[in-house]
Image (cartoon, rainbow, N blue to C red):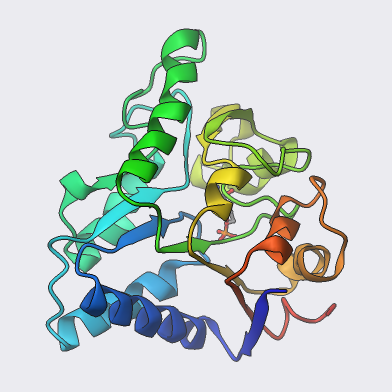
Length: 251
Ligand code: GLP
C-alpha cells in the first residue's frame, strides 16, 4: 500500500518532495524526474528550487519527462504543457531545456487527423524514457475523477503512452486555463499510460482540498480498478501520497 502523509498545507508537502528530490540529485546528478502540470505540484517545484539555490546543487545533468500534453496546441501556446513545464519547472530550477521532454514535443500542434505521426509519438516517448534508464521520481497530481496524467476513468492499467480523449469533466475543470471557454479546450491529449507511470521507481502523488477527497478515498480505499486509474498506486512498490486534511477527510 502507498505510504500516506497528511500535512498542514501545500508548502509542507512541497518541502517533503523538495528534500527527497534534492537528495536524489546530490546522489545521482543525472537523475530522471517525472514531471506533472496542474496546480498541485507547484509548491513542490518551488521548494525544490529553493533548496537547489540554497545548497548550490548542480542540476545541469538532470533529465525530465512530463506526463502529458494536449493534442492540437502548438508548443509555444501559453497553455501547452510544453510551455507550462518550461515556466513552472525548467526556468525556476535552471534545468537544461534540451534535457526535458514533453510527450507532444514531436507533434507541435499537429492535428488529430495526422494519425500516423500522432500514433508514433507515444511508443517513441516510452522508448526515450527507457533509454534514459527509467524515471527515478514521478510527481503526480490527481483529477477530481481519479485520473493521473490524462488517464481518464476506463484507461487500461497496463497502458503505455498514447492518445486519449479528454473526459467532459476534465475539459470543464481545465476551461479556466482557456478563458473559461470549454470550446477552446482541446478534445484530445497524449499521455503517459498507467503502465508507463507504474515503471517509475518512486511515485509521489499530491492532492489538496476537499474537491480531491473522493478521488483520494477511491485511490486508497477503493478496489484497484480502471474506473479510478490512480488506484493502480496500490500495486506500486514505492508510492507516497501526500495530502492535506481536506483531501484526506474521507479516509
Ligand atoms: C490535469 C493534468 C493532471 C493533473 C490534474 C489536476 O488534468 N493533466 O496531470 O493532475 O490536471 O490538476 P490540479 O493539480 O490543478 O488540481
